[in-house]
Amino acid sequence: MTRSAAERSAERRRLRLRRQSLTADERERADRAIARRILAAGFVRSGRRTSVYLAALRGEASLKLVVQRGWQLGARLYAPRILSLRRRTMAFVALEPATRIERSAYGLLEPAARDRVRNAAGLDVVLLPLLGFDREGHRLGMGGGFYDRFLRRRRDPSRSWRHPRLVGVAYACQELESIEAAAWDVGLDWVVTENELIHCRRRAGHRTLV
Image (cartoon, rainbow, N blue to C red; front, side, top):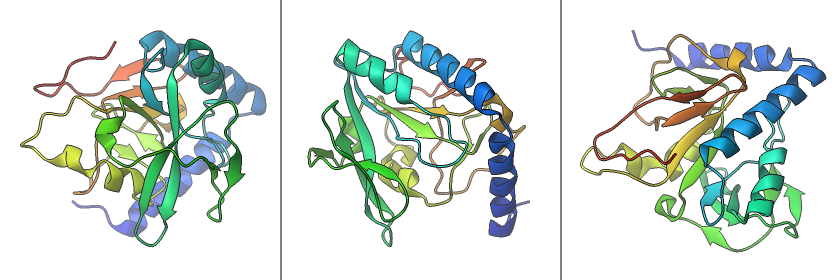
């Protein structure tokens, strides 16, 4: 049975409360463990074009340690910037130590730089924030659809996509037994939690990064 928009919204509320229930100490330990797994997997390393996100929402897993270490390693980091809320469009902007970070009108932290990547193929890895996930690579985001729109060409069954790899970032408590994917959803290749690195899917033509 197809889930209604109201049911998906209720699920999002439950997952927000679930991750917000973590204490500050639990979240700090989990963020460190997530960073270690991301770096050990090679998702962020010298020369690799990786999009991170700047955690601004309550309870969201932070990638601050990943960003700091990425700069030390010489990784080419990017972060999303919303171009139009009405059209649900965004681009990825170069993120460097000197990049000015600003809070947008939408309440998100975004880089102010102008060097933008507008084509998903211009990135090697995209680290996505999640509200929920399952082991098949289905995810539940905030509901805005920005990532799905930016990555929509990956839904084309006639194409074999090698880039970018899509890596969801979440706490283990956000895992669900199953998520019914909507027609517009773009699935994940990997999920990183504080407990494990989950390989969600192996499509024909896809090559493992690590």
